[in-house]
Image 1 (cartoon, rainbow, N blue to C red):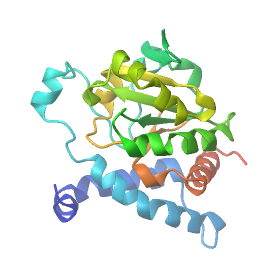
Image 2 (cartoon, rainbow, N blue to C red; image 1 turned 180 degrees about the vertical axis):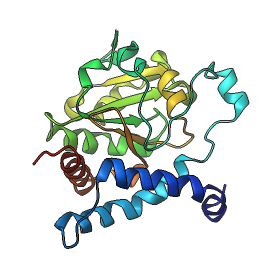
Image 3 (tube, rainbow, N blue to C red; image 1 turned 30 degrees about the horizontal axis):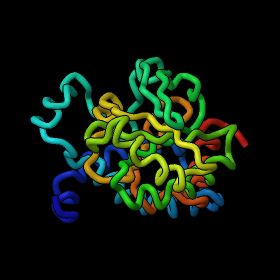
Image 4 (tube, rainbow, N blue to C red; image 1 turned 60 degrees about the horizontal axis):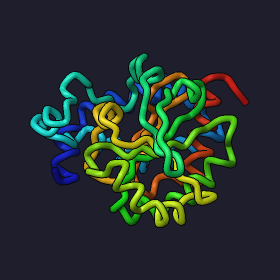
Length: 231
């Protein structure tokens, strides 16, 4: 799907979703308010990412093969289902595995980083992104997700453990692996892919490799805090 084709065919949905974001997430902008310019700077590039979030990332056959037919993909503006928080996921933690829920992250800005062992950009940016979010531990969580579609599994990840550790903050590896559920909610064919989920469970953005910087994160936190009446 080319960019022009996406604009022509997907613009009605994008326009509707952007309207909801302005009204329900970002709130009305007052004339002369300093955050008007922050919104413009943040939302202009974000529009391009939202456009591509509507493109079908997986065919119906691919979803059927992966057993994802009962999972409805989400778009920006929608809220994650309630079982998103209490469903158990398989985590790879420094060579071991553990199953746990995402409920401990509820109430924070949760950013899912979809990655793969064979994705050079993923590994090159991993430490930088982890360090960035570690500066906001009370407000944010940065969580790695390796979906089934990557063809990675425990063995593939463990085999590359040294390389991944060298790319991780503090040399530690913690990631959801062999995942089908999150893959079904946020299907993608390109990595890294970042899904931003607000403190109240709304999908507030879906972005790509160059879209997670100090400025983007601060802008997002400012916008969310303003919307919820925080300073």
